[in-house]
Every structure is written in structure tokens, then in C-alpha cells.
Length: 497
Ligand code: AMP
Image: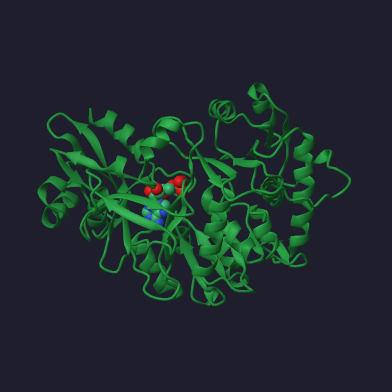
């Protein structure tokens, strides 16, 4: 039996059905095109010298051709290694040295950059499918699919690595297939579904969740090269499912065009990659009648938990563990914590990666009894719903006491006039770290540092109250909408000193 993920998809999609649909509703590529191009691209990679198991490093703009390249790597047994288009030459040189790719495919602008340091062929591919990579495609279509087992690597994704060097998470054909099957079922995908796809495709969310689940369903992707709130809202009547990051939802809410009528064809809005504020969840429900389904996962594991399709979607939670995923929440001694208590979140399941590329020591540290330490802090309620409290490295330890940033942020966010907030720990002579809040106000709101501190004193234990409150126009975020607390720490650390 061939466990190649491509086979899993090819057994399900119908070649004549549309695969990529443009936002104006015209069909650009069918599943037959996916079969055709992915086969040609796989053969081209082979001619360039790649053999199964080799890494193919890709840094190109989002386009249907970039997806064809991903599927080509699957069927050719090559390890797909997509890179964020924001990476700079120094970072790229590190990736090339660490991953030792057999072929690099880059955008035409980036091709010369890679040529400076890559020790393999470097080809170009632009958003229209043009470039040196496609200039010399074979003149026959082999349609071959290389046999792969469950455990064979399908992809390596570098984690964002806010501390130290980025680590390459090794994901197998089995890891990705498991998530595609589970989420397809859990989120009730049916014939006729159309996925509005406006996420980047170098990240787990846009690639392994959005794309894989839609392709597993043989659905069209209503394809946006990037997220733009107005155009996405305009296209909602032609879609049934949307997957986005929380900032997508806040940006949509800022547009008057978002209303119930615009969403009548939609059956499901899903959010992940960063915490969805309860306020956003509620406002979205009022404006559209839809309760956003929040789920939780990460590069190393794919999805681990999800609020249900049918049943209670609890705001502020990421739902129970997926059916085949086991979750543990433990204290510093690795003992399970009581219900409702916060601890470190560990996961195991067929979706969980096998380790970081060429980092055996790190792998020993990160796995305990077969469970992967996610680095997230979480608690679980009486119904098994999990809430993510933050990254453990963002935990603030002040005077020896733990402060979970989310608890303080939630208290601040309840103040009228506050739009959102981020709580960080800043080194402090007496306390070790001082709880520090960075706050974004609504337009025209006038909330002062004293107002925030007074409110916190009336709602939280004294040690959790922010020592300083700073006001900013917006919080620094990465492309997936995650607040970059490391950036805030650096900025306010030097400020506080
Ligand atoms: P990445 O590997 O870039 O996908 O980042 C994974 C991290 O994003 C997780 O470890 C969490 O800290 C965070 N994350 C993902 N989904 C959620 C969510 N629904 N709520 C809170 N944090 C999330």
C-alpha cells in the first residue's frame, strides 16, 4: 500500500472539478490541472537531481503554481520546505546550510540571493508560473507517485523561533494525512463546499489545514493571493467555509459591509494561529449570526484541539482534544494538574511530528513519555474544553509568583475604551520581573495609566497588577497575526532601564 499523501488526495478528488477559483468566480485550474502540473513539476525536480527524501526549498509568492509545486514534492517523495517570503538573506543562508536542499525554487527576485550561498540548482518561479523552473518542463506526463510510508517525511517547516535559531519541524505523510482526515470529518466538509483561501501557504494554517482539508474534500479554493478585508467580504457569498487568523476577523469587523446577508451562504468560520478575543467572537456573532469555531495547533503538531461543529463553541477556549489526540496538562514535576488549574500542555497523536531536523538533543528535551511539550500553558474545564493561557516563555514571574499574561490582558480588555492589550515581564531589580501592560485604545478613547492600574487593583490580586502601562497605536504582529511579545520586551526593557 502507498501511504503517500498525494495518493490519499488523488483517490478523493474528481479531475474535472474546479481546484482554483479566482475571487471573481471564474475557474482558473481544475483538479486535472493539479494532476498534470504536479506530475510535470515532480519530473522536473527529478531531472534537476532530486531523489526521494531530498529537501526542496521554496521561497515564492503565493500562487496556484506554488501549490502545484507542493503537490509535486508529495508525489515525487521530496521533502517540501516552504519559507516565509519575509525571510532575509542571512536567515535564508542559515536554512540552506541547515537543510541542505537538493533544489531551491525561488521568486525571480530572490533567485540571485540563493545563488550566493546554495550548493544546488536554484530555479525561479513567479506568480504566473513563469521562470527557469518551468522553462524546461518534460514533454510527457508520467503521472507517477513515489511510494511512501506513513513515517516518511513530507515536509519540513521552520518554526518562527523567537529565541535562538529557527528549528525545522519534520512532518511525515502520516502526520499530514491524519489531520486532513480528522478535520475533514470534524468540521463536516460536504460536497459543494467552497473554501475561501486568503492565508499564506508557507505556514501550517494555510497549507496543511486550509489547503489539505479542502483538497481532501475535492473542493474549489476561492483563491486570494493575500487577505484584504473588503474583497474577502465581497466574496463571502461565493464561499461556504472560511479559515483565518484573529486579525482577519477584526479587520472584517471594521468594514461596514460585513453583515448577516453577506454571510448567508457561509456554513463555517474557523479561527486559529493566535488567540481569538472573546470580544471579537461576540461582535462577529452579532454582526453575522455566526459563532466562530476556534481551534488550536502549531507547526510541530498540526491541529490538536477544536471547538465542535455541532455543540457548544465556547469563546476564549480552543475546544476539546481532537478524537485521536491525547492531551496532558502538567505542573513543574510533570504531575497532572487539577481541573481548571494552569500547567504545561503536552500532546501526542498521529498528527504530532517526529522531531526537529538535525537537533537530537532538542528532541530529547521536548518529548516526555512520547508526549511533545508544546511550550503553551493551558487549563481544562469540566467539559474537557481547553484554554490556552499563553506561551510558557511569556509567563511573567514576579516576586517568585506566576502571572499568566492572559488573565491580566482579559481584565484590561474589559475596561471601556480599551481595544486590546499585551502583558509582558520586564526585568526588575526587586521583583525579578515587573508586570507591564501595553495597551491599544479605541479611537477617541481616553484611558490613563492610573485608570488601568486602579481597575486591575479592584479585580486582581496585587502581585498581578501592572507596574507600568504603556499606550501604543498598534501591537507588533507577525504575518500570522501573533503578537510579538519578544519585540515588546526588547522595546520596553530598554525604556524601563
Ligand atoms: P505556529 O507554529 O506558528 O502555528 O504557532 C503555534 C502557536 O500559536 C501555538 O503554540 C500557540 O501558542 C499559538 N496558537 C495557535 N492557535 C491558537 C489559539 N487558537 N489560541 C491561542 N494560541 C494559539
